[in-house]
Image (cartoon, rainbow, N blue to C red; front, side, top):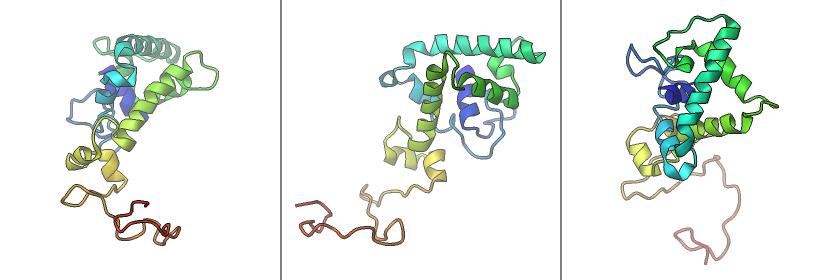
Length: 176
């Protein structure tokens, strides 16, 4: 829940259901959580999987300290970061990722994974992500492949040709 709340703070989305506590619901559509940020962070190849428990403990510790500074009453049943209202979650993340914060690199790294999940679906193949309606790729208007799974672009993406093809380029677009 804490990891979801952190990812939702980086790229907010809409609540999955009315009682959703991790997702603040400050944005329409799917955010980092719907895009798979937690799955990406938990993937062993990312380098964070073994540290997530410690990171969430530290984040909740920071959230408790922040709440005390701000004289906020938090729901004692919830993890402290999850219990923070969104604007306070965002303020705390801003503090943790600020230049000069001793733990900045760690929190920025965690935030980058939330962004990668949304912007690139880094934990999925592009075709699988698009087939599932990935919120980030869909929002950006990422083109789906043709029926055979190959991307072809009959029109230039910038509306004009940027460079002439090399004279030895084959009809399939491969250099000779």
